[in-house]
Length: 159
Image (tube, rainbow, N blue to C red; front, side, top):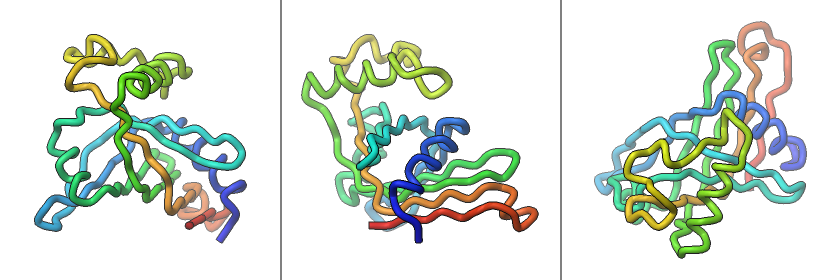
């Protein structure tokens, strides 16, 4: 197992290159549910935090109410993969919504985007707009060359 200071930067680099990931929640009956989402990650040298802009009234939100955890997996055609298991928390007060909106609007493409591309999100105060914070409990980064040719380093970290 590697240190967070080694794993987190490699995770962010790979995740932001791939951009889209499969995110799993658990429904109230204990069944997994997946969808494809677009997180943004920040490594500040000590802590890694992620955010997803999403609807706080969705089915996903009801799953998170019962089980506030997600599992995320990124995959690229060269078989680079990285994953994160995270605790979640909603950031829904007006300032947190504005901060989340700006965080994505100001981030460089391809991970940054204008939230207005979602038709129902006219501004950060829209009822269907929410910011879901991700706090990693476990990270895994595996270059495709490790899987296909036995070259590279598998990085894992957990709390």
